[in-house]
Amino acid sequence: MPSGLGIPAVLTMPAFRRVWIGSVLSNGGTWFQAVAAGWLVLQLTGSATMVGLLALAYRAPAFVLSTWGGKLADRHDWRRIGIITFAIEAAGALALAGLAFAGQLSVAAIFIATVVMGAAFAIGLPSVLALVPALVPTARLQEAVALNAAGINVARAIGPILGGVMLAFAGASWCFLVNSLSFLALVAALVLSPHVAQGSKVPAALGEAVRYAMRDRAARRLLVGMFLFMLFAGPIQELAPVVARRLGGGPVALGVILGGMGTGALLGAWLLQTLSGRGLPRHAALPIATLAFGGSLAVVAASPFLWLTVLGMLAAGAFWIWILTLTNTAIQLSSPSTLLGRMLGFYQLSVITPIALGSVAFGAMAGAIGIGWSLGIAALCLLAWGGWTFTHPVTDIDRDIRSIRS
Image (cartoon, rainbow, N blue to C red; front, side, top):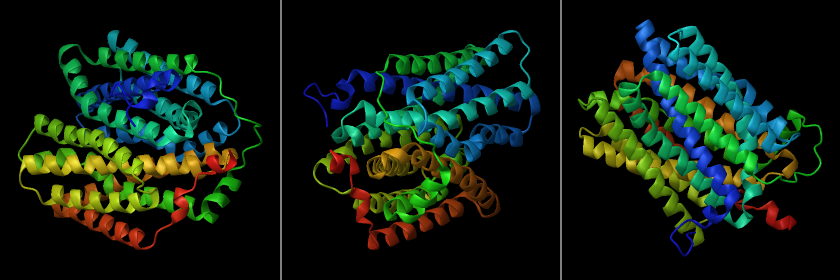
């Protein structure tokens, strides 16, 4: 909800505001590095496959480390884990900048730094996600989660464009340096955050969290729903260059298409907060968002015009952020505090893994039958899942064990 000054009320809280700004900057910096590293690898190898492997190198550590990061979050101080892991990412980007300035940067060095930074990100993210509800009142948690997701999408929309401009006019070394400084901004925000009392830290057995996620109806629906959504929705971003090429556009068209999704995310965050304030329950909003995203994806799949594609991406971005915000909020409010870190690790895994799998699968399908049919099949799968969840609701998704305990 906005404050009297038109600023979201949660941003008037200094601790959250610092972490949010640091997160937006670090996400933007990550795109600077992604643009520069991908361009250098393509220049040095001439292989598009190597560029794809570079993207996988950053995500692959999350396949095995997300759950471990969740276990660490349930045993150790969230701030300290975030400070250490994001400092490692800053150091990795700084190392690349130094090698680039010295003219000694190699493909091997780029891949090694990318894997190390991806591992640090996978380990640290559950702790930073768990820190958010400790910085804001429970009543403001969904607003805080929505702003976090909106910030990520703003960075996704603007970061590649600014990174491309810096790469063209200043070189890759400066892109890496900007990324390093952006992570240091997040480290500084965490250092300045107040200490959070987390209660007793008991040994965090992963099996306990697995049994809870399988037994609890809300957790099961949330994690399975996120996995399936990202499996079928993720390709809309990863395959955007193919969409732009089909429309006869180049880099500018690609930027406009991705920018449409980022802009839609901002509008979606505002709309979700408005409707939630008027009583829209999470268990109903999730299938609505899935159906709406499926329809938006169908528009993008069938569109022969850039303007219509951008409108489809605008709507897709709005309901993409609904899914991320609602699922993240529900997991944080409905999970036992002793399992929160591990549950957020599962959440992270349910976001990252299917994006990689879906992009490979639907990318191969696009090569065989065309991007329109590929995205159209993904849209039909989303519409089917959204329809089933709408008619088979899990109302436990709306529970708030924090309020019950207080």
